[in-house]
Amino acid sequence: MTWTQVFTPVGGSLGISALVALVALIPILYFFWALAIKRMKGYMAGLTTLLMVILVAVLVYRMPAGIAIMSSVQGAVYGILPIGWIIISSVFLYKLTVKTGQFDIIRSSVLSITEDRRLQALLVAFSFGAFLEGAAGFGAPVAISAALLVGLGFHPLYAAGLCLIANTAPVAFGAIGIPIIAMEGPTGVPAMEISKMVGRQLPILSVFVPFYLVVIMSGFKKALEVLPAILVSGISFSLTQYVTSNFMGPELPDILSALVSLVALTLFLKVWKPKTIFRFASEQAATAEVAVASQAIKNSKAPFTTGQIFKAWSPFLVLTAFISIWGIPTVKKALVGKYEGANLLFNCLNPIGKALSFTPEVPGLHNLIIDVNGKPIAALFKLEVLAAAGTAIFLAAIVTKFIVSISWRDWLATFGETLNELKFPLLTIASVVGFAYVANASGMSTTLGMALAGTGMLFPFFSPFLGWLGVFITGSDTSSNLLFGNLQKVTATSVGMEPVLALAANTSGGVAGKMISPQSIAVACAAVGLAGKESDLFRFTVKHSLLLVVIIGIITYLQSNLLSWMVP
Image (cartoon, rainbow, N blue to C red; front, side, top):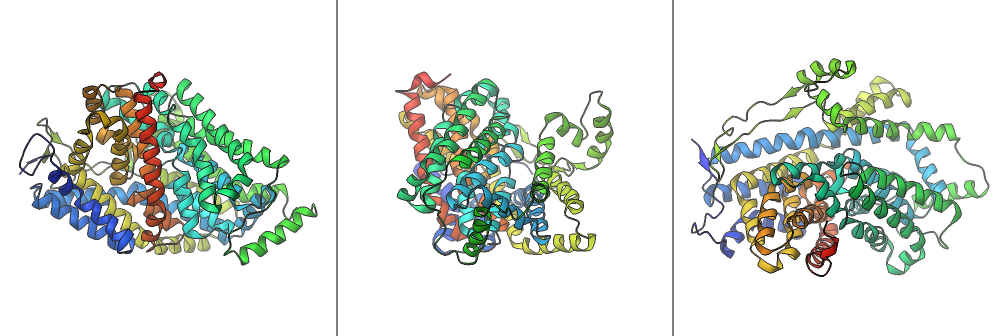
């Protein structure tokens, strides 16, 4: 039997009452309570939230139980592939460098640039993380950069939290600009126009985030000590982000901004050093290592040669190459068996990609949900194995096997250890993505979106909150844009706001929601070995998420009124 989506299940009125919005909020409020107050383990919070959303969908939205359950299954499968697969391969690659001693060399090379933890965070969490976001997206940037910081001696919780906050600046242009490109289809607004508007919002945040990151780490006074380096990092990133987004499009802002920022800060640190070296008060063993490395540098006796350093970084250089190639649109088509050009290599890839791409119908769900326009909603398991970003990272791990000269036996043993360590984080990810799918399929997400859209003249301020909510629920700026893009456009038109500004606000607001998304929290904890500590990380990031989305709301409101000249 089919089921038609209903966005106002309580009373059936055309207006969105506070009661309806509160009903739709129940699973989200429960998840906040489970993590922030009850401090449940991530997988328990995820599973119980999934049960809660199914109950609300069935009892309040009158969604058939079978359809609700199969929606959660569809989401859980997506949580494993591609999201879980990215985490497995990313952590596996990192563990290979640790097992073979290459990470000791990486640590030393970073220390040769700076021993200061504040500046290391800017280099790794902000710049390198942004580069990975631009190339791969999903969970790879946080997973890899957080693991690197832990290897350098950062506390796992701090490393994960800092990388989530640093990831704010690049998310909108992640994965070769997919969040913005995807919005063009359902809204009809050219991606280039949205890119220009986002590029006139996020650069303001990109200047602020590095400073804010260091303040979180060390306090305001300690942040002022490294203000020159912060300005070099933030301004070089934001200027490049503005220029590329406004004159080149949404595909390259992250990659180019990250590279410019990384190079600029590295070169700057060759001629400028902070007066004092900042380390965490709790550091003991790590401090001893820093002291040894520092003494070696002062004596001009580098502990490792350039060749050794290049070899140690090679796994991540190979990773960068693979995920960059995987992000090229033409390559993507070949990896799913849909390339139609004359390139011989891509034509050879076509049959392999096609054989490893599966889109079976979700039983008990496909075409059984009818949208508000009377059209059935297709439900497919999208299993594109070869095209998945996780596969690109896994191939990098295979190449790494030969670079670091580890035996196949140890290589496989390390992979087995990785799978064992990630079993609970994978369960968390599967359950929270299942929750997102049920919330979307039942209409709960749309109910909340319509409630925020009813704020009238204050809508320019609340518009980013819609994107923030969408990313919290779905874990993806792309999904949030697809979910709320049309709603933003229609509402903006009705209140006299420029539609392109509302679409950009949805994208920009979404970046602040990334750091508290259940998926992101689970990914970050998995990467740094904090499985079961998701509640601690959530409590760490939630206040920063709220502050940043308020800032974006203020920027959007001003651009809709006093600063309307900024709208293209």
